[in-house]
Image 1 (cartoon, rainbow, N blue to C red):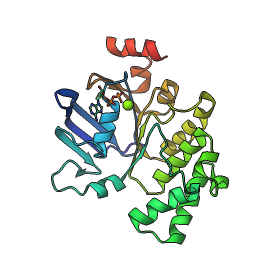
Image 2 (image 1 turned 180 degrees about the horizontal axis):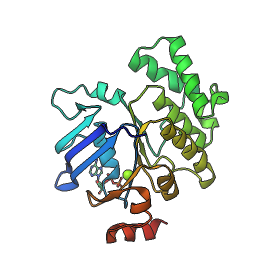
Image 3 (image 1 turned 90 degrees about the horizontal axis):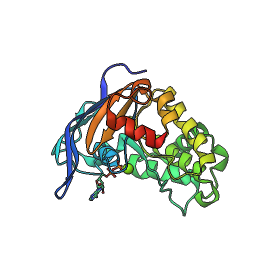
Image 4 (image 1 turned 30 degrees about the vertical axis):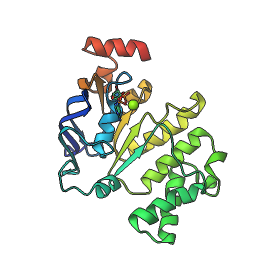
Length: 246
Ligand code: ADP
Ligand code: MG
């Protein structure tokens, strides 16, 4: 349940690639424990927004705070920021040459300095959480796309992130594999994880999101509860988009 204190604060965020201004002044708060779904047409800046939150992109202007700390400050420790933010992409990016369990233990050992036993314990807890403990010894190529994405989520969770960012986590999956991934995300939301989720899954947004943000052309056009933004949009651009995806 959201408790009111913003976990993520985005203020006047702008991002340009050369002359192309992709984010044109985004203001957005995500409360602790809140799930915000970001929707909008391809090219509207959704991925760039997420990437600015964990500093995969350097903003051109504006500020981002995570847990009250400015991550866009000049003296920020980028690695320390990224450690607090889990990110899951459309492409799962598992390490192909090691087992599922090692996909989870290696980053914990390398980045957090956990010893072998502690890393293994956390790995197994999180594989259990996504329903894949029995695949601990398998190689990623032996798993379905949906299973690989659940491993990618478990790998991010094993780093004890304060927030999770999801960039179209089900867009690369065959339709029959989408449900299991969304179920894992629904469980995370229920457990109180703070989440920003870029998705085209409108039924997921309606069911799970505390708030839906519709972006177009680098701006937030409309935001509010899912039943309003998806169910009864006020803006013509939101309506146009929804008639195309629903
Ligand atoms: P979305 O995720 O909503 O589809 P993106 O944030 O990926 O949108 O992209 C928004 C715009 O920024 C697009 O026009 C895209 O081509 C452009 N863009 C994204 N990343 C880069 C980059 N690294 N260099 C140049 N242009 C980029
Ligand atoms: Mg994108």
